Length: 186
Image (tube, rainbow, N blue to C red; front, top):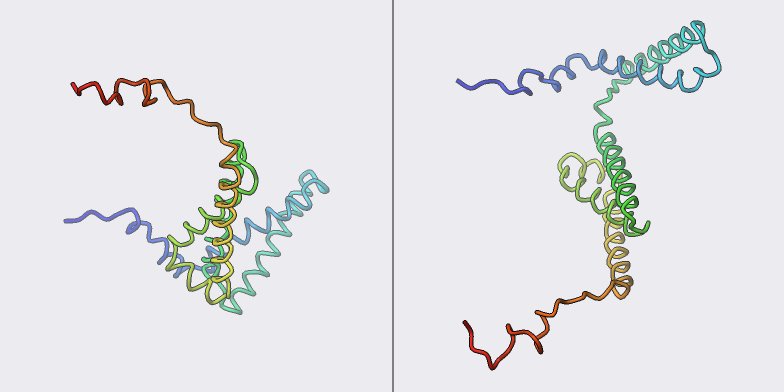
């Protein structure tokens, strides 16, 4: 007997296929209510302002859900775009991390772009057909190629500025017993 996995129990994909309109409506409600709060919350404060924010969020949700029902659109159609947004956030976080470690903007940006490209390549079956259909596959590959070129150029131009290593005395062949040809090995 095999035990069911968490994914078998949750079955998020099949639940979404059966109830896409409900899940999308909840997401629309959260999105539009948050947008109304950001834009109107400071202008209209108090209970009346909260009621206005909730009413605007609900009205926009009904409108978006109705349009989605009439056109057959679901948020699942935005799957590849969601992955691209996630990769963009990953790249931005990596850029900020590398910059905080003291690296210049160009190599930090190149490293972030290359990590994003490698991550997108790992999601190849999900993203590559979508990027190809959108006509973005070749530009993405060109950006990654130029990022490699820029990173190599930056490293080559800064390699001369690196400090020379201070080798210990034992590595000097003239004074080390390890490299003395007249001394027999132990």
